[in-house]
Image 1: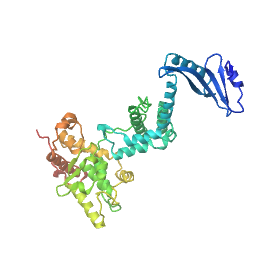
Image 2: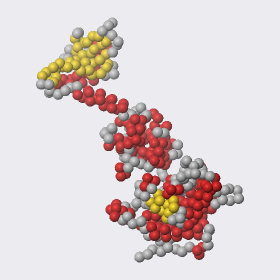
Image 3: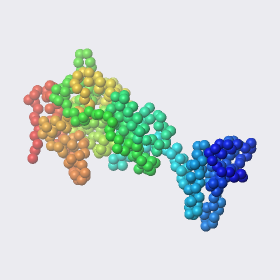
Image 4: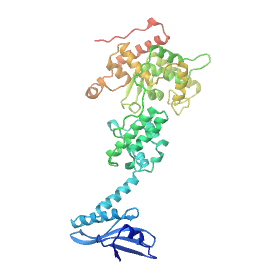
Length: 425
C-alpha cells in the first residue's frame, strides 16, 4: 500500500494496474487515499476508527469516483468524516442519507408523481374532483408540454422550468390555457409538498401569466333573442340536439354537463320535476329542479323522437344510445355562426338567468341560489347547514316567470302575456 502526497498532478500520473487493484494513501491526510482498479475505476476512500456498539472499530468509507469528485472535494469530505468519528458520530450517516435521497429522487419522477397525484388527489371538502375536472387536469398535465419532464425527479424541476413551459403556451397565444396549466401544476406540486415528496414548490408566487376575459358576461336581451332564434329550425336547417340543450340551459340555468347528461330516470314529466343526484352536481348535493312548461314540452318531444326511432337509452340528449351528447365545440361554433353575436359561453346563460331574475323579475337572492344550486350567501357556511329549506314553490314560480320572460323576449309569446314577479315581504 504505497503512500504518496496526493496532488492533482500526482493523481493524473498514477497508472492503472494490470490486474486487481492498488491503493495510494495520502501522506497529508492520514487514512485518506485513492483506490485504482484494473478496470480503470478510481475511487476516493477513507479508513478511520468509529464508535459502534460501545467500542471503537475500523470502518472504510468511499467519497465518489475520480474525476467526477475532485481531489479537493474528496479530501474535504475525508476531513469532515474524521471530525465526526472523533466526536463519536457516524461519519457514514450523511453519505447514506444522500444515497437514499438520490434513490427517492429517481423514484419520484414527474411522470411517477403525476400518476400518483391523479389517482390520490382530493380537493375541497376532501372530495375527489368531478370526472370531467379530473379528465381536464389529466389532459393538461400529460400534454406534450411536459414530455421532457417525464423522467426528471420532481425535486429537480425549478421555477425557471415552470416559467419556460408557460412561455411556450403564451407564444402559442393560449393565454387562458397558460393560466389553467399553472393552476394544475400548483395543485400537483402543492400535493407533493404536503406529502413530503418535495421540500419546495416551484410554482409558489408565480402570477397568472395570461389574460382572461371577464367571467361576468350577462347577455343582453338582443343577444338572448339572437341565440334563441339561432336554435329554431328553418327551411334550410332542421333543429338538432344541441338546439334543445341550449334552450333548456337558457330556461333552467343549470350547468352544461348536467343538462347534456340528463337521464330519463331523473325526470318526472307528469310532476314537471328533474332531480339531479348528488354525484352529478358540482357541490355534491342532490338538486330538485322544477320544470317550466316549455322545458317539459322540449323533453316530451325528445321522448317522442326516441320512441319513433326505437331508441332505448337512459339519456335524454343522445344521438348514440349508450352515450350522452358530446359534440359541444362543433355545435357551439355552428350556433355562433347563426347567432352572430359577440363571443359568449354557455355558462353565460346561467349567469344571465341569475342576474335578470334578480334585476328584471325581482326574485329574492336565496330563491335564485336555490334555483341554480349555488352554495353561497344564504346557503353557505353555518347558514347553509341550518337552512335546508327547498323553497320549492318559490323556485317553481321563479322558473315559470323566467320561462315566460324568455318567451316574451324572443318573441314566442305576446308581450302582455308575462306577469312580472315581485319580491314578497
